Length: 519
Image 1 (tube, rainbow, N blue to C red):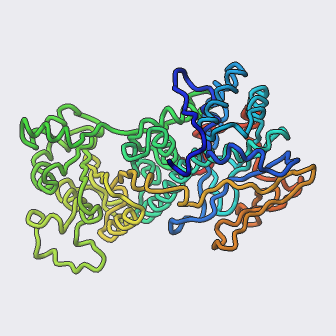
Image 2: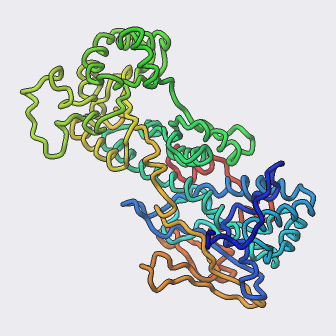
Image 3: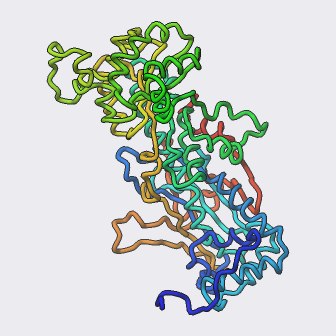
């Protein structure tokens, strides 16, 4: 017998129809009984969502993003079946599922019946505008009950709230960090920042934990860039961040026709790699087309196939983009000669005999040439391009553009494909994101709540009291703890949703405008 199992012989009910109480069980099991564990007379709880630390060097602010989607998808849509169901049937289903989890019902269901009769979640969310870069240890938003008997609901939804918001917010922050790096590279090497909109392309979908996370995370990427293959993000944005007119978010996501390894392998099984390239160019006589080029020998493509096709490529009204997908990204793009501390002996080498030494950008320049911009940096001819779509990280992106600059090439010569290593190899602890209660009303008396573990480094110390967020003399967001009603009224934490309805909504274009990365 499992000693941790509940002392119950009740088994989970068979699923014969859609559950109407599913939203009520999108929480941790231990929260089911918290209502009776609060002090008697509790009528109010205020909690906040704060990013308390950073595990990414150089990131001290976190982009607030994803709350509006949560409010629509969970607080409204997920609860719609519950509120639409017959009251007795809904409560009976809740009791059956509860008993299957905890055994004999000592928690009761009157509070669930009361919630059903209300017909909406009696909560209010106050938040800074989405797209705001919020400093660490400053709240992005707060949650509070609007009816005294539903104080328990505030932290009951903590689990699903945290799960829904931390990932799109974290991805938006990482993308914002990439954007700052690539903007700096563009400014240094004379590139129009508008080109940076397309310089980081999202290939992360297949490596995410599921379509929902891929869609939400992909939307976070799209706050700073327009290039993406994560098509699930389009519907996510349309559903949760629509414009009032329904069609004014502008270009949310863009991509180009491109091959994958199966296409190249299948083509080469029937003909040569050169003929496969020719067939692709025939199918795409104009516009941008991207061809994965390392299925067999990437440097043979650069030194053999592309020179043979130069006339056709230069005659096209469009760009052929070459995509290497293996090896060390910086060395493949920039060559081993560009490694920090490398001693140049290029005079003793040739591009044909030692292409790895020179790298893809130099080899493409050697074949197709290009122009020199106003700052003196080389830009490949507009008919040819390069994207590296594997193993890109923030540090590698910095390394690559630094090497390109040293080689005399503008940063726009390379597009980066970023994947799940950047956007899925993260956790809620990346920015120590947490929901914590800071204030309660008990027996008519207000209490400032504080979590401050003696055994902790200080990271888990919570704010206390009612909260306000304001700008200081330098325009920086700062937190006011134990805020007065006057300070709350002036706070940037303003109501965005209350009692089942939005008070204010932002379009995706609005969120992008707040962040300010895409003009």
